[in-house]
Image 1 (cartoon, helix red, strand yellow):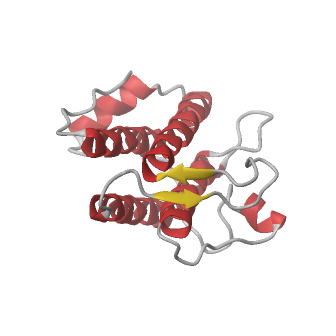
Image 2 (cartoon, rainbow, N blue to C red; image 1 turned 135 degrees about the vertical axis):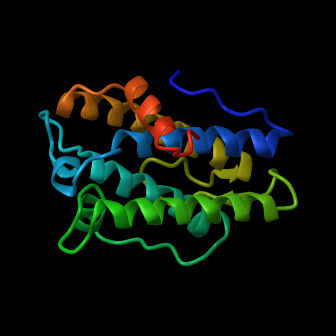
Length: 182
């Protein structure tokens, strides 16, 4: 637990705070890295830090803007999905970090605008979704916390593999630079 989540004022605020804390873990993992460093794959895995930033951004946007709010979801081919884990020509880590921040703001606005967290939407047909399953906004937030935390852990391991820097060191560096902890 490299950071402590701020005190919350209710369920919705708590879920948003925990999601932001996990986003912070992903952001800190790329602190001070170049596009080349963030795109490198220091293990047998295909995962890179830049790819994880891009993936969690697209995932959060898809769940909140696409599924929960019913806006156009940017579904694509299997190749598009795989491209979601790496920087493409013309893409930069800085651009994806900006997009991640924008997506986080949009998620917060969307969740705060809901009448409550009991709003229910159907899951799309997919091999990994039970047929006919419906989920609440609460479930979606919990899923995003789970997904982002899982990838923040991956990011910690990848970063330490790159240059030996641990999450605790990066928390301290972010604090020295005045960057948000959450």
